Length: 407
Ligand code: SAH
Image (cartoon, helix red, strand yellow):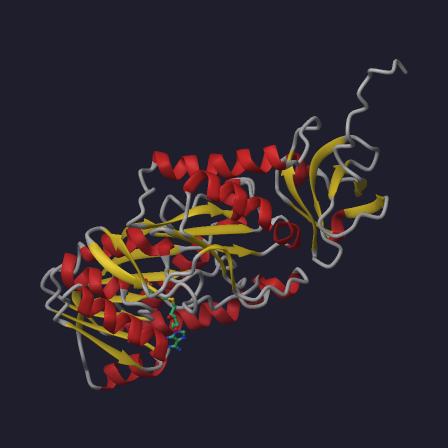
């Protein structure tokens, strides 16, 4: 070899062979290679290392990151053989994600938006939410946890936040990946008090350090606004209110005659009360109660509402628990429908990815049948557009929000 020839750095270490007839999803760019699809591995990759995924007879499919302790053994990030997964590559991915939010006109130091949505931005295992000048990062993949420094460098360069906080992954998810990441400050300064974000002219306090998810439910941003359009002059029940988003939007933007917001968590209740006060939502009352019990007792009292919002937590964690979850969805929706006066509006959500659109609509159709009411589907909505879904990985489409008129 002539002396001045540069030997190309290896683009990956080990090679992962896929079983015959199991490669099709990866040619279709699905980013999760499960243990069960793997024929054999040449090499002994460390967790977090770059590996090539090839067909059983050695043809290149994709490049990804290995995790020996996860059921998702390889997360795929590039389908091009000459693409190395280096800092330039990750920077470009992050810039591309932030670029979308810029295009959507969502980048502002006053508002909140999701900057990186995992698979939806071809960055499987990374979620970054912006709240004003702060960023909250969640990692659900070990390989991404190992690259946190590089991710923070990129984010600091592109959006210049005051601080970047790491928020623990959703219950159970971290464990699946062998991840133990306590909440901590990654860069800059922590906020010295609550953060406030603007949403369609309203203001919400966000609990960045102890709140649910990364502190706020950004995915429901457009749905809260859509729901408020139906609230005018109506008595509204906002069940599973968390920090009061639907209730405040209905009371202030929607001019509801009254709003009752309910959540079982004491922290959520105090956030919702503070947000009601902040927005001068004088017609809004916040109550701590279990939703199932409260719905049943309202029914016993023969209470009636013009609009009922149901935004429960994830009832199904997997497809295996889907039928139990559907029974729970049926129960709350039945109770919700029973509380609606004729012509009332039901805003009903599910954030369980394991429940499909069809499952959810079939459940509502069964509720209509059982309750003897007629339901008119007005809007079928999903998460806001800063939560893009990768069409090669429909598992990322989790949020369903149906707005229906009930006769
Ligand atoms: N609608 C909210 C998000 C709701 S998240 C928003 O727009 O921001 C789901 C909420 O349900 C959480 O705040 C959780 O505390 C609450 N929750 C969970 N189980 C509950 C129960 N059994 N009764 C009432 N609230 C419950």
